[in-house]
Length: 477
Ligand code: PFF
Image 1 (cartoon, helix red, strand yellow):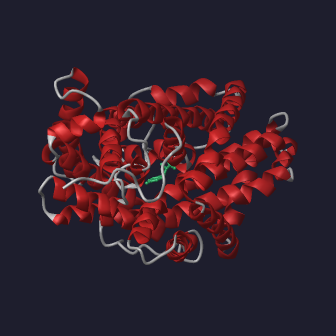
Image 2: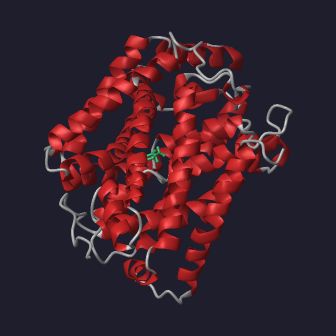
Image 3: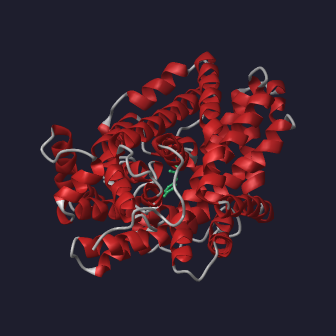
């Protein structure tokens, strides 16, 4: 049985186009919103080290494996897994990996769209100079209170959140309906460099704040006690969250990178392209941390400020720095664009599958998926206001204070994505024919690089994910 030569959905115009699209998927709210907020909650340095180890030892090899599956299968993750399981003479059940990815994608998009909506909401706020008022306030506490209260106004109002969520989703649907070459490629090409430059300017501002070095120490001084005993008692959760963040930030474990791999030209090097994506993604997350934490400490705030952290911190900078309103507007526009280039990869697996069934046009498939994710998003919208006191799993101590949003974020990021990555690693490293794998990688199975990669996938990924899971449920405590 042979695998398809090309995907019916089209192909990237070049290797660079794939790198841009995959970077577009990887770089998003995960780097700028999520990385600083969870690094803050889990105490800094030790968390960052575990995150970086997960990126290098698990994330990069799994990303190569996931791209490889797509490139070989040339279809949506559901169909690629069906075709490849058949080719490897394994059970059809492997397509469940594709299905699980579709479910994870919907759930992630449902909350992703709300947070991206916050970024949209901040564009007119910053542009109108709302935060320049901070210059008239006399203490850092007043500044922090003012900016925090503006965030509170926004998330406390379900209708406003719903409106921005809807706006974000409509644009997402429009971009996905445009298809591989049209919608996705063009936007990312100039947006990534622009985002990078704005972040560098913001690092410059952070360096001018009085507590810049405190921020640097917070991020890089490794203290494992803080990671394992966040609230005085031992907990393996921090390591789980760091690993989950590695998967989330690299868009791994749910088929997004697999479906992009399906559009890769036949002779593009997987190792080089994925390394470029991983380096860019990690660099941007670190930059975001270097911006946020110095401002946190310089204003006497706590790094563990929760999901609103970035939105409560950056406006202080935009209020105070020269040309802050212009920079701030640019920043939130770029953040929204980065979120869009990630969001489109969250529904692409489902859309590609629907189109492959032959029953849907790309447009109707996209609208169907978008509306479904939009509806699930209501759970997150209300988690910040009328349901903020609803803790559905409060009977379990680990989930005591978690809202619906917290639970969806936890389940998808910390459980579903690493599990998806685990199965991808097992399938590619243990079940596929070596010669096929080597052919797709354009590498010799005897080379050092190949053997290292195979070792990481065969042993390090399954053991790593397994141990982190066991640790998180308290087996070693
Ligand atoms: N990697 C994206 C980010 O860091 O914002 C989020 C994401 C996109 C996660 C696509 C998973 C995914 F499949």
